[in-house]
Amino acid sequence: MLIGIDANEANVLSRVGISEYAYQILIKLHEFREAEKNDYSYTIYLKSSPLDHLPKETSWWKYKIVKLPKLWTQIGLPIHLATTRSKPDVFLTLTHYGPRFSKIPTIVSVMDLSYLHFPETFKKNDLYQLTKWTEYSVKKAKKVITISNSSKDDIIKYYKVSAEKVKVVHLGLKNLSMNAPSEKELSEFGVDKKFILFVGTLQPRKNIARLIEAFSMLPESLLSDYQLVIIGKKGWLYEEILSAPEKFNVTDKVVFLDYISDTELPNFYRKAEVFVLPSLYEGFGLPVLEAMRYGCPVLTSNVSSLPEAGGDAAQYFEPENVKDIKNTIEKVLTDKILREKMIERGREHYKKFTWEKAAKEVLGAIEEVAGT
Image (spheres, rainbow, N blue to C red):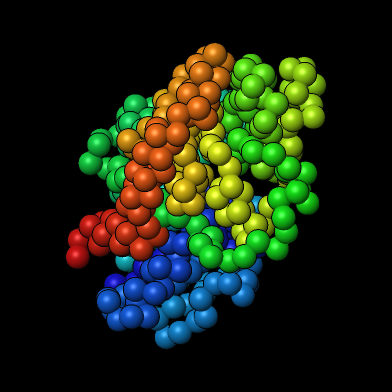
């Protein structure tokens, strides 16, 4: 069987979200074939030459550069697939958009429908593409892969497709080193007290402004001993987040860190008293599992996919209820027995989520569509 893959999301230097998903699935499919667990051949379709971190070509793993960067899935790729002699038996796209007009059985990957829940947080052109092109791709695809049952329910509801068409493949954990020594002391980052940790992009649906407000409401006996450390790059509409510490009179207690390397990040998880993810919506919420991996108690929202990610190892709150966020943080910070139970459960829970398992499930979807 010849499998075609749109792997453009994996062919980038800085990988987050769907780019990390695309990269990890691609690497694992290559590893399965290299270990001779199957005899499939692959053609990897890209807009530009593969970067060094992608697998090297072999007799069964080939790259095809289709040079039409604009409207690539709408024009360039479909024309190539229609005119090439060596057509894939199945086509997997590691993003929302499948090749338009292609007659090859296609599988698309849809992380979440945040653009439908929070359209105001997206740029106009991006919103149009996500809305219109995803709808077309989902309805035309033979199979849709998504990353949580919550997202599956959304896809069925909004795109009116059958439950059998949508397959949930839970994400694995990014390969952060468990034992790599930290290159810096946390004090070099401005962290010199016990701290509460947030990791994620600075954007409205992450609900960071409410987290800062909830932090400011903690009793003085706690507030005087803690910092709130917010790690993440600026996304969009982040001005309210950056101004929140001054608004709530905690400017000297909130630390914003734009970039932390994969070597340094585990040290923050290990040393944080709690990790808080107060998002209004998440396709899955990988930082929840990252925190559990390093023994950090997790507090997160009781909406979308987050209870699925956190299981019985996390504590939950209403993300639009600032008092509930504050009370949950205070409860976990002051209850040592509860914290220890959460840490113990978290260390077992995160082990359920691996990239090898995810890739096997993606390969199963390919085989199902191909009828093998």
